[in-house]
Length: 126
Image (cartoon, rainbow, N blue to C red; front, side):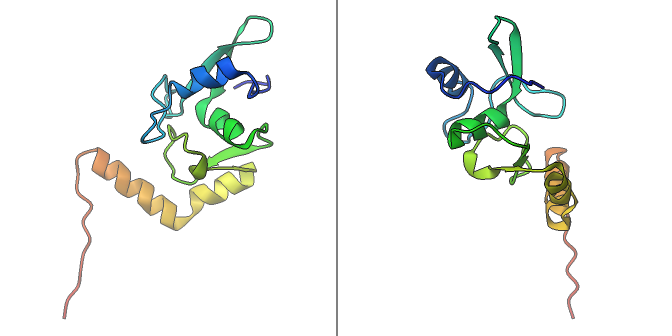
């Protein structure tokens, strides 16, 4: 998305960013890309428009540091900007998260529910 450092020391940057984060749910309320990730646009150092993924900015502000790798969602919810849900890691960590069977089932159940369908749980009795 951007090779420009996230300007976490700029109060106007942080203030403008936080206006797009729902204070209750922590969800990004601004523009989202086709994958559901929040996109925050800011004038860059030379005045050009720079785009950042919102969850990366949220992590950087919360930790007062630049991300070193992939910022992963522990909640599997792309627009989430809650610092407690976000972890810095590697692409290998991100793939392992994706392939975790428990998380895969939770994502599938959420997708089914979002489509207005019901997840059936079969119970076999005596």
